[in-house]
Image 1 (cartoon, rainbow, N blue to C red):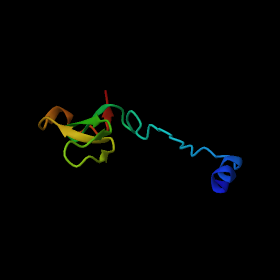
Image 2 (cartoon, helix red, strand yellow):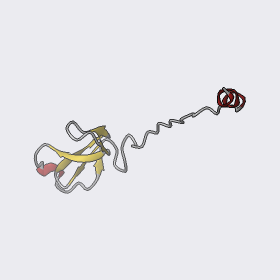
Image 3 (tube, rainbow, N blue to C red):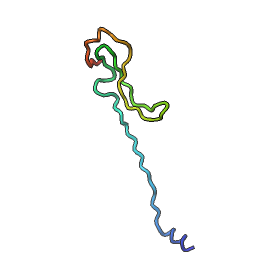
Image 4 (cartoon, rainbow, N blue to C red):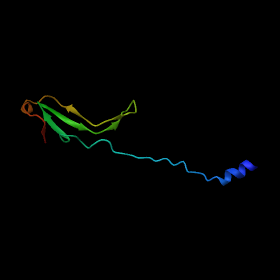
Length: 79
């Protein structure tokens, strides 16, 4: 009985948890959402959760389509 009354006199502190959500990926980096480089088109893929391993994949550029001779001399040409 004395233990119970002693516990009631001690103020309880809240076990608060702080949750912060940050947007870590930029919409795109240096070259914009898409650009041409030496005949290939590069497209920005935003950050996303992987399907199978459940890890965060940071945004990155991927090459799309085939080789285009008319863009062969372009280096980081944005459009």
